[in-house]
Length: 429
Ligand code: 0X9
Ligand code: ZN
Ligand code: ZN
Image (cartoon, rainbow, N blue to C red; front, side, top):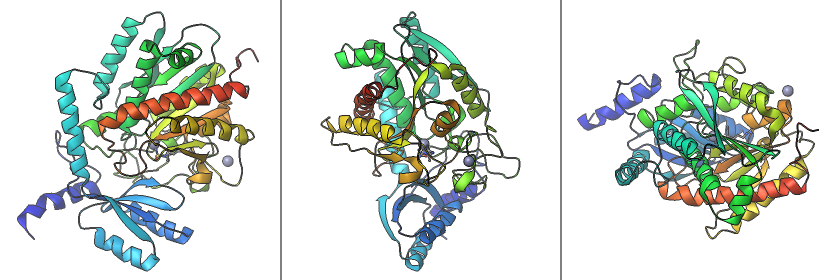
């Protein structure tokens, strides 16, 4: 073996053992590639998913009805090729070196940090986001209010901001960055906060002033810090498992609603979609559920920000055999969002449907729990840019265009909600 391949081998060992690397060392993804694998049958799907559970060589990035996006460690292509031939699926490379993308993202971040502090030409750290939040709260003391969702496993505070211009507004809750590596979500959430407070555009003023906004820019704070400091590709929480050396659960599978049903989550602690040992096992999700319950009479609409794949996903997540009672309304609302995004000059297209219907069964997600258990009748997952060119490592030049799409989309969505009668005062009902 050539000497220069030793670091790669070490990195593999480290990955296999669940990130037991040195204190200030970052996990590197040199020559890791990402493939889109298209399949047709459920048998093919389960073989590919099995492959993705072998975390040494493969990691699941994204899954849809007929394709998986798999990150491969260097040298694992042979194994994939064998499976491709055996199962008759097709694979297409879309990222040849993940580390290259991480490096250019970091370079862009460093460059933007030199020009100023907080902003939307780079991805901000949790400390930067919280410091900026404090500035905003100090600058708009009558309109804004700070709230605390709770504490994370590692003891960080999960913070949020309420924006309210007047009483008796319908409420909109935005949950963002529940998945650690989905950085575009908190970048978009903070940009929206800023627009609501500073824009002079009439559409934005209407939107900002006629709704009460509850915005949690980073829910999975431990995971988010971990993606900045150790592993850019981390998804889950950071609470160790009692039955495995793998760390964390998928927070978007941990809510107490049809938990673990229909293979909507994995019981394997090493899987990216591990549902946890029990519902609400993750302190962040327990805290978020208590927060939602405490304001549920004020919440008309819940939006959960995710990336990537440009989708609007409604309940149900736990089954595709049934659809929620107001499914047709939710589809109209989603169409309004998609049409509004298409009116911008970027050419971005959003698709929509129920989560289980157009993706895969996913049980225990925020929007499903809010819809099924808390009576939030308009509850959406929004998967932002892109559809699989950069995936999670979306270059910072996309932040503002993506956020503009979110803004115009949310404005149209809420307009449609109003037309359909969903924005009445809940506590008065
Ligand atoms: O799988 C997820 O949690 C979301 N996709 S992501 O790629 N960001 O991880 C989709 C969740 C939608 N499903 C339900 N609402 N059940
Ligand atoms: Zn059930
Ligand atoms: Zn996500």
